[in-house]
Image (tube, rainbow, N blue to C red; front, side, top):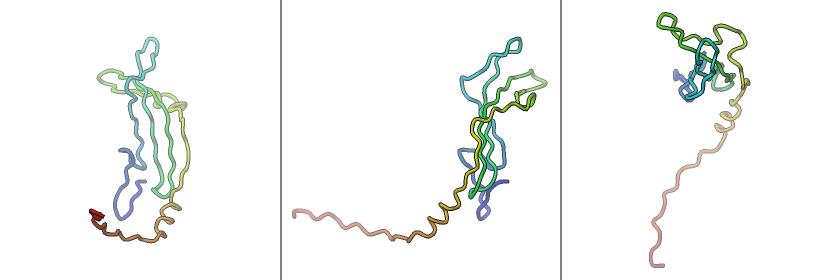
Length: 117
């Protein structure tokens, strides 16, 4: 589910609600004996809406498995990955409602400073 308000999709740091993202962690890898080095990736899941959403942030490891197979990640081999580090539900609708009830302050024209006073 992608949160929309007036037909506009919201993205947070290049992430989209309802779509999982795997973001490589530069310079971080895990040595797997007799297989090679697996690059560590941050696994990110955002679900819900701008008003209330669920966040999952975890770690996975992926390795290039050759030209025919492409990239293989640990999450496709075991249910123990990704290793979820952060998991939570957050609501921000009350902040939006509170902001809507604030009075609107009109800007005040600035007067030029008095010189030679």
